Length: 588
Image (cartoon, rainbow, N blue to C red; front, side):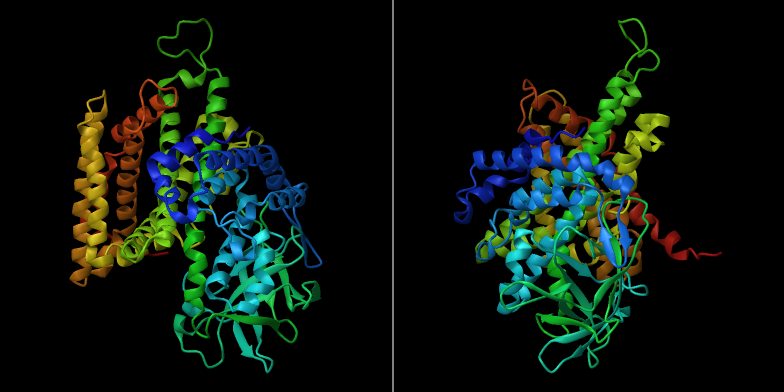
């Protein structure tokens, strides 16, 4: 049974991630603490009562493809419609098209709860939100008027069509083609794979955003255009017309997220799927990245949501399951396994890692909000902060989702390895998140090659200085356990500064391959340090005598003592491992 951790979410938004900065802006004066709490409580209620009960049903029933039509699991259609009618799809949507234009931070918090309810359910609306953003920023007024109101409301859903059989992460290999038509539209031909919610029965229409090449397009990614391809044409009065030349050719049988239809989509079996250009010809990748960047944060939140659900389930099981006799037990009979020291350690790790993911994802959402709200003088700072945090939020949080779900299986023991308890489903569901929306290796490359050098490396130094101030405050706080926590964080920051200097120097000297060989451990090093600092920030804002404050302080102390020491090994790996990595030759 899932229960939304509303109080912890609210605390993290306000005291750790900086929601007050967003609330203080003139565009969001209506976003009071009372409104925030009301939104969180209702989102949590819907997640717990409406979405979570469908998680097992979606996993076991999956989706069914018959004659080109996909049917979702029992109850999913009704739950989605209730969700859309509740206004949840429009939370951050543009007001001009029926949206509520609320901060991304609130969207992140709600998205966490919906993913805890069911990751397979929440991923569909995530793609719709990305489609809304891409159309709002790049589409013509006519396309916006036709499609945005119903996408914002959730009456229709959107998809992202990038991947092809021969073109996964490398879009240079993309072959889907577009041909100009005399009426100003285009005809799309080709196949796309791994298309989330490419076909389903939740909405009457599905709006596909499709990357394709024109015949005279330049080679490589500079020659990709983005097109809007509806499942059904839209008549002038807004009603649905004939079916477009696009169909679902297959549904994948996956390790997890069985309730989410992952489709192979065929465009142009006949005369061509009719599409409308979004933005300019040959500039489609820039438009699609508008959709992808926030989608990467959303995927990080998927890791967070699954981690929270797995943690709650493992804790409940550990309190109920009795085995052996814990050291110092003062009652007869077997002890709850939650009383055994090793299980305590495991539960603390699950809780601490989950809070790290929450703090980083919410901080990323805060930067996105501030970049949108800030004046000209501060916009660059917040845009760079959002850019730097995005690969960390996506990669570290999804790794956390897998790690925490795996610990959850371990705590269940043999019962975790069978499907009846549900612990295995969390592990299976979580495993996709480090792969899609750019693998975590690609996120590491992005961080090292593109984000560290922002403003000549000055933005990174500014972030590290902020974390150093938190470390110093913890060291000097005076409360029990704070000094060693602050000192451990200072050591981690020294490891991170040294590794960052090494990375920037390697790039400046043209040793890019060496930098890339250490990119993944560098992202983990930076994420560990950032996460520890955010936990410490939350501890500094907590009262040890408070029922909620004491656990936050305990988690921050535990994480610093038990996990932050990894930074030294990661820093050494970054500096010494490239020679071995680059010398390795794979053999069959």
